Image 1 (cartoon, rainbow, N blue to C red):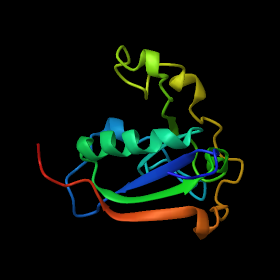
Image 2: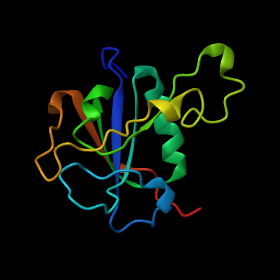
Image 3: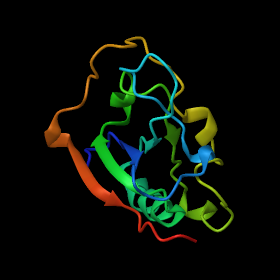
Length: 142
């Protein structure tokens, strides 16, 4: 992934006709909403090179749906109320890390800034720095 060292964030929105998600997977609402109804799962990182491993990890969790990703971890503010963080694991720690979503400071770095623009339009990043995967995850029941 080449985001110029700014990192990335992705939002996975559940497939309406797909398998039901584990409710623990739902972690955000878009800021243009005024009530909590759980729009999907948001995850990101300030490190470009964590994207591959995150996408691989979440593909196999099978939370199928539409995924929209954008460069610039800092741009998540004003779009969602919360977003989990994927930590970059240094080479010397990669054999002891069990979950880079929960360890290595990831919980402290997640975005929990809420929304200061509730009910207003979303400040979506420019399409040139975003990409969409229309059918993320396999949808196979496990």
